[in-house]
Length: 216
Image 1 (cartoon, rainbow, N blue to C red):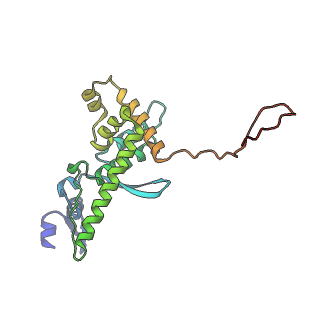
Image 2: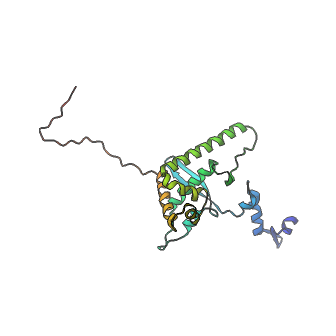
Image 3: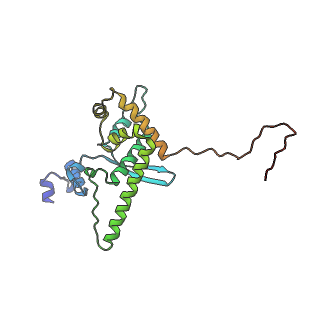
């Protein structure tokens, strides 16, 4: 207790100890499994995305996601620069990209801890990473080579739009439009439109005395 108070992690008032802002930061560091000092600056949220195979929960770090900045910014009409569907599609791609360990610097910990079935644990993680990579490949293939690059840059490598325009030598303010188009196509891949059910009917135009000819 003395150490906690002396370090400014808490305050004593009327016989009660309350945690300070520094104490909350310290606790967030303790909860971190990778880089504790980077963790304290994160602002994470869990978002739910769904497709035909069910619902999955995606961890989104709002402090580092360019998509979060775009969703929180408004255009001249007061509307978000990207809607929730586009945001969730991009964060879902980033989640699979991270789970597939396609960018190790993300900080995903693939170590298996605990006792007993270590081999099974390693196999399960490997299968999960492989499945995530396959989902990324299918998503990028569905989007096409013209639009997949901007998705990787912004959603996965967390590059800002100005950086993308400079590196790709695009016109100023063009990355936003291209990104919105790419996210719309990506969302359509994750949520394909339902095909209209049609009653199969054979239609033939002919005169009233027409009779079909059956050939052997």
